Image (cartoon, rainbow, N blue to C red; front, top):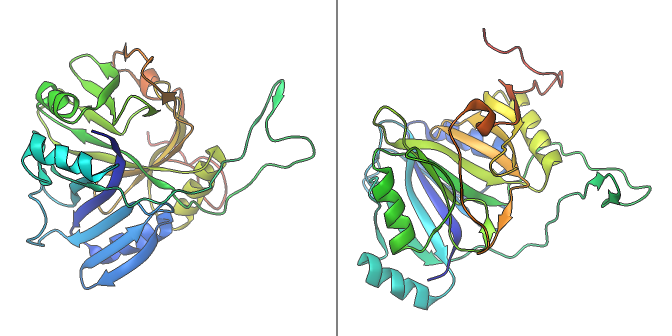
Length: 300
């Protein structure tokens, strides 16, 4: 079975109007709107649906309040869908964490989108007499990964690896596992985290942007719009990615990220102990003010 990545995410939210503003400021395109139903797209057609949390058509929530209610995974062919039906007994269901999951032949579009090359020492990728790019805001390319808290980590890992064919990229032994859809791809499409106190719920949804300059441009813009940064900009040692996390009225956090490691079947998963320096090589707590372009004062 060939799962290509996330094709759609669906939120159930308490304040649809606030979410409408947030996702427009975030850089998504609003393609349909009807009452308490909003449908957004990233540049490549990955869908972000927002529904009122009382909508009876939504899968059951895994935590109170606004949160992600379903992840739809895109597959390559109808044959892959047939395999899903055999393995799971249908196209929609829940994982062991209680999250709604669905599958469809991917509707995402192929794009010719490239980031700005870096003039590294001895390797001027951008070239001579070429300035770099500055972004006034971000336009996310796709939903790259989702992260959930769980209290049944081992069972959840077995479900995604043994039933759906996900591959382990790296792990925190007994605490977390980074999973990618197939042998070849970005560092993770799904990260499962088991905290010391039993808990399940959404940690964040991550949106891919072109390059580090767009991470900064998007973060500064979202700051100017009045949304609160949790942490970022920063850089993850495990995946090498640059990040910026923002509090999202649709639930938990939203992340801009770029420059994650690309893996294939030769990759050997590593084990890490959770620690601040493992989460971030460096990071700005509270973000950067979009108007002054200076770091906000860290809380005491």
